[in-house]
Amino acid sequence: MTSEPIEATVRETPDPAEADEWVVVLAAAGIAHRLDETGAGWALIVQPRDVERARGALSAYDEELVDESPADVPDPGYGSTPIGVAVAVLLIGFFVVTGPADENVVWFARGSAAASRILAGEVWRTVTALTLHVDVAHVLGNALASAVVVTAIGQQLGPGVGIWLLLLAGAGGNMLTALVHGSPHVAVGASTATFGALGILAARSLVMRRYRRPTGRGGWIAVAASLALLGILGTGPRADILAHFFGLLSGATLGLGATFAFAPPPGRAVQSALLVAAAALVVGCWAAALAPS
Image (cartoon, rainbow, N blue to C red):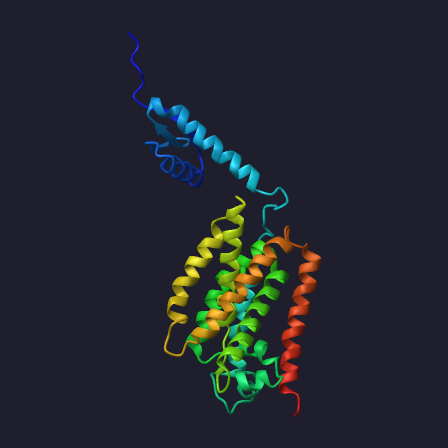
């Protein structure tokens, strides 16, 4: 007499994320199941009487994904780039020139994100303020965060696109802060842009997961590492919480648009041109700030 098997394998996969999705599907269908690790990956186990129901639920899930996933969203990725480290070096180098915050020093008098001056038309301050820092701890924190998150953005979208998104997120955050906070609010630091970078990465990760086009572990590792750092940097007694929030919001908005606008990312020639243009923007903003009044 042949005995009936106690359990049956419905599906196998080497991808733990895919296996987790199957588990959720069966749990939602009320089908008892178990996920076992095998030498080749993961096996989804059910009782023999539930095999057909389980296969039906998983097939319906597969069909739903095919219907909802557009074919014109390509896998992202630009490749290796040292842009985050370059930004970190530039931030530290410029701090050596400007020194710590002092309203009597021309860099801070002319370049800080003073809400009253921004609203009076000195919009270049939204950019110049990103290059100034209060003290050594402030600049080192932002440099370390930039080395992680800006590198991650550069690897996904390219260094030129990444730098422009970073500048726009930081400047946008400073402008929104000036509009909401108003005079006599004054701020400096790359933290607004750093939070913008986090918003860019988070938005892209959510969109790409929605379309089953994972951005890779690098993006999420970058977010997790930077959030741990910014838990201290972003909530200290001298932290500008409102600017951080608006930077994050600006970055998330830009990240959503960039996911579709730059898929795939532009090539190296365009990226190089964008880097030159971004550098020209920062130099131009400082030229406007230091111009004789």
